[in-house]
Image (tube, rainbow, N blue to C red; front, side, top):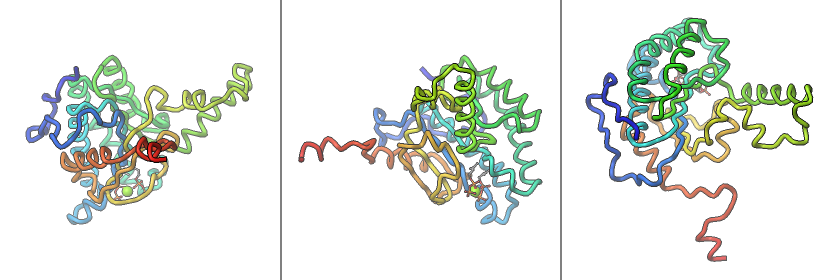
Length: 264
Ligand code: IPE
Ligand code: IPE
Ligand code: MG
């Protein structure tokens, strides 16, 4: 059983019990989140964008704890896209330093709380210090059995697909794999997320109705919940609403509902 989060910082007011309005038996196995709106959150408070990113970290810590406590098995979050390098240099530098300091400060708590941390993306292009901290975090938590927490850093869905195609082409070139044998399962094996089932639920905050190059393959049949809440304001109520929305959906995966097929 997952150890409830009790030792981490800033969780004093956090309710560890799942709201009774939610059906424990119909929770998504894997939640993916596009954590958007940090800059607008700061702007509405007349604060610099950087403060929005710092506040976003607190929302992430709380969301991870809630997901862990409520029994979600995998949480994958979009922290920095391959396109985010185009932001002003100061903002990019701030974000990299923020990732470093958060990892340094939180990794022991995450480990004590049995979280298995992973990072997804072109990690070799990140600052070396951050790469080292990422390697340490993965190594330290690799045998944990609680929630799998995947952080997408320098991640782009198109880059991931091109990378997979290159790997398969290489295997074909050396005669290890015949091109005719490449199917969806073999392709999936070359993705960063090969260990995990696809996300069941995608949450995007700040009201934007787009994917922004996130998990292009993996989101094929995810239910999408878009909320106007800016990421730093995302809380227990927002997560509950996302899960209630998910539980109100009928997933058909291209088939037909039991009800409509019975009627036909
Ligand atoms: C998301 O918030 C965080 C990152 C992309 C790193 P934004 O920084 O995109 O915030 P907005 O969209 O400008 O409000
Ligand atoms: C998506 O947000 C990337 C992350 C949350 C890390 P963006 O703010 O970069 O997306 P766009 O530019 O609004 O599409
Ligand atoms: Mg944004």
